[in-house]
Image (cartoon, rainbow, N blue to C red; front, top):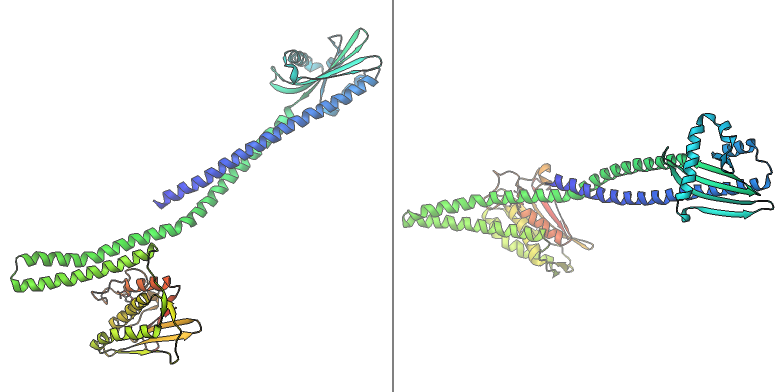
Amino acid sequence: MFKKVHLRLTLLCAGITAVIMLIMSLCYLYVSETGLYRNQFQAFKNDINTISTNLEQQTVISMEWLSKMEAQGNYRFFVLDNGVPFLYNQLNDPEQAETNARLLLESRNAMDTLPAQNVTVTVSDGINSTLSHSEYEFTSPSTDTRYFCSVIQMGTGSSILEIVVLSSLLRLEQQIEEQRVRFLLIDIAAVMLLGLFAWFFTGILLKPIAENQQKQAMFVAAASHELRTPLSVILSAAECCQDSTPEKQAGFIKTIYQEGLRVSSLVTDMLTLSQSDSHRFPVRKEPTELDTLLMNSYEAFEPLAQEKSIRLSVTLPQEGLPLCNVDPERISQVVAILLHNAISYTPEQGRIILSLIRHKERFAISVQDNGIGISDADKKRIFDRFYRVEKSRSRKDHFGLGLSIAYEIVKAHGGSIQVTDAEDGGSCFTIIL
Ligand code: ADP
């Protein structure tokens, strides 16, 4: 399921960014291309102005001058005397004579058919002549090439000299085409990179969620497993109870009661952890005398320790202690979990020391035993939910939730809990508040 979400998120992130990038690229291309056309047309008009000024100043138009102008601006010139094409073009490019004639005709036709606003007309009066030139853009139907065209007309008395200048837009279009391909390649590379980054970052983003979901699934599986045992005992005891003698019934009812208590304690533990997960863990802090709290815990567990012939002692600082701002009930619950474990995992004749140390602004509560101890590998996992070192070691009233509850309570207080090896074997749990 997470792979699907991962893929969808990646596609969404990369897709949105790609669309934005594409729109921006298209906008840029539009602005850049219209600018290029405008500049080219302006440069063409400037050249025509220069040519017109030169023409006005010359008495004779030499072929040499025309060839020079053609080469300079990459233009094509047609000279017409009273509408009759001048020999210049045939001489200059005899093989292309037919094509040139067609091009000339097409350019003239275009000028006649184009709307007036698409044609720029400039008129100037000289001493002996009138000169006008019109610039426009057209597409040659025979070659499918776009041209800027200028028709320069010079009237001297009865004769009219016409010069048609054509500038092909082929090179500009090639330039634009190359620019579009460059942009397309850059966009494709950027989208691929974006896809990679999106895959990587959404992966990082989803990792804790996936881990959390896996933990939840493991929690539910472990909880169901733990609940199944006492429930099946309750069900079979209830079944046997129906057809047994009153004396035997008492025994079955006792079993049902004990297993019911187990289920109840397990459900309470699970509820505590679920409250902690959903941040609904009630912690009511108040100034608390930690030494009194430890003495109360000691008194509560002393009879249990005595039952197993375990020596339980408490060590408190001599000097008066400042109050510590904690939830006394919750901290008592943690101490109870640690003492209960210490008594459970310490053999008879063992000893347990409950102590309180103050270091500057911090308090350290520790429960040290000389019991079976915990291996280094297990130390890393004992705070995990439903983790028990060895199932065979575990008692019936141990579900592997005690230390995870202790961990959550200490965390809710902003403190820390850790386990180390005790000097004479056994383990030492320390809570820092
Ligand atoms: P449980 O309810 O099974 O004691 P906990 O979460 O309290 O669950 O403890 C997890 C496991 O850590 C226990 O099953 C036990 O194997 C180990 N453990 C906890 N406290 C001690 C201890 N004082 N000495 C040895 N092992 C311990």
